[in-house]
Length: 324
Image 1 (spheres, rainbow, N blue to C red):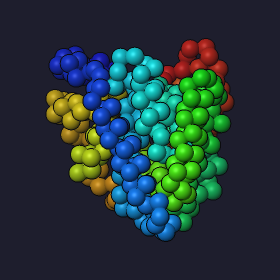
Image 2 (cartoon, rainbow, N blue to C red):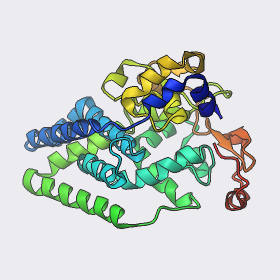
Image 3 (cartoon, rainbow, N blue to C red):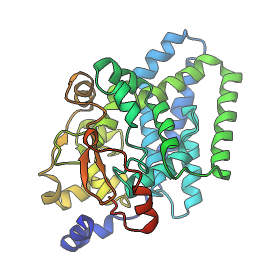
C-alpha cells in the first residue's frame, strides 16, 4: 500500500527501477583484493591474518555480501541464472557456501517479514532466551552470527530445496578454498574465513544487522543508516528505501530518498554502525527480543510479547494470511 501510494504521488520513482550490471565490476575487484591479500599473508603468523581481517578484510567481505544481496533481488542482470552465477563468484573468498541459500531465504524475508515460521531474519526463541539478554551473550551471538543464520533455516516451514545451484555453490566453494589452502597455505584461508566472520558478526560492521530491524521505537519496524560507510558499502544502509522498492538497485536508493523526503525524513535513522553495535551489546534494553513479529492476522507484536503461532501455517496455505 505504501509503495503504491508513493508511486502515485511520485511517478518518477518508476524510472529508478532496473538493473545495474556494473555491480559485477565491484564483485570482481573485491574478489581479487581478498585473494591478493590472502596470498600476501601466506607466510605471516596466524594473528597477522586475524588482525588484517578485522582492520581491512571485513570491509571487503561485507561489500561482497552487499553484492550477494543485490544478486538475491536479481538487480545485476535480466537473466536470473546470470545473477546466481555472479553471487557464486562473489561468495568465493568467504569460505562458506551461502550465496544461493541467501537468495532463497532473503526473498521470503521480504514477503513474510516478521512471521516467525517463515522469516529466517528473525532470531529463534531459544536463541533469544539463551544469548539475548546479557552483554556477554549478545557478544557471543554476534561472534557466531553466521552459524545462527544457518541454524534458523531449519525451523522454517518451507526449507529451500537442494538443487543444482546449491550443489554448484557448495562445490565451487570447496574447490576454491581447497586450491587456496593447497597453493598458499592455511594462513591465507584463515584470513578469508576471519574476514567473513567479522564482516557479518563481532565487528562494528555487525551493527548493520542490528540497524535494519532491531527496535529503537516500537512504532517503527525497519530502520535506515545514513552514515559515511554507505559510500564504500554501496548504500546497503538505505533499508527503509530498499524494503519499499526492492527492485531499485543500490546506486539509485539515495535518489529515491531525495525524491520522496516526506516518506523518509521523518523516520528514525542511524548515523553510526559502531554506535549501533556498542549500544546493542551494552544497553540492557536492547535484546534479541527487540524485534517486531506478525501473527496470522497481520497484527504486530514486540517479539517477547508474541508467541509462536502454529495456526499461521493454515492461514498461509488457505491464502488468508496478511503478509508484510
